[in-house]
Image (cartoon, rainbow, N blue to C red):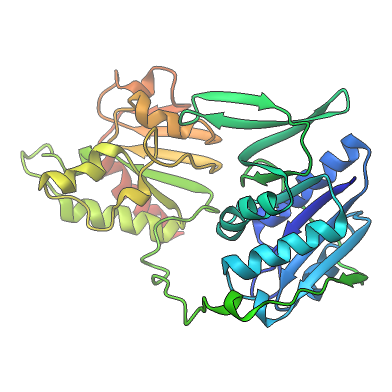
Length: 343
């Protein structure tokens, strides 16, 4: 057993997602640092387009499990394809992007092959010929650097930790790997897809800006009255014009459970912080949030952090933000939306 295998699922149109291309970069640099050959494994209804796009990566070979059975997300078929690719390659290190499909099935594949798996990997490095992985624990408060001697070692790579691979397409030679599914492996079927309208989508992982709203948006304003309706209009307007992703502090999300008026498009899925998500956007703008530590911990991977708050002594001003605007968020966002509308 030797070498490194990168497993990918092409998108329905045959292209590769941003997270998949990021993992290509991780696989390239890791294999080079270890001085071992590496190959790519693809599974999907059609894989030639993705293989051609990866022709210039330097992979020693490209393996593919292709067919209609491997088009839709399904544990049985995804696991069977990944197992076949891993066995065919004989790889001791197996990488994959931490997509929903791989996160669901690769633990089972590792068990079938007698391997070990680690998830949410945020970095790989080679020290003295030993591969070491980085992973955060306790809501991104502690980072561990560790290695495993057991092989095969499966690693699910989080998005946003590497530059997406870009290179010229070519004519790739693909080695087909045959997988025959039993009838009971086809019991789960996908009958359709349901997705919100583009203007209703508020969580955009690939957005350049993360806009986070705090509970201050629903509180009484300078005139002594709350203006939740206007707050919703301003926030939605900015999200639509800037194509930003929407986050929330825990306090704002919890207001709904306390029977208080809140923003109807906000849910726990938008929550950022110690009890929420930890996004990785290039820029972040926090509004009407005081910058308490449980919330700020979710911002540690944001590239540039800015905040709007009327309190000059808020938590954001204590070295937690690059820029703090001491101003009324309603007034600021009215002007920002006007400027975006005129551009």
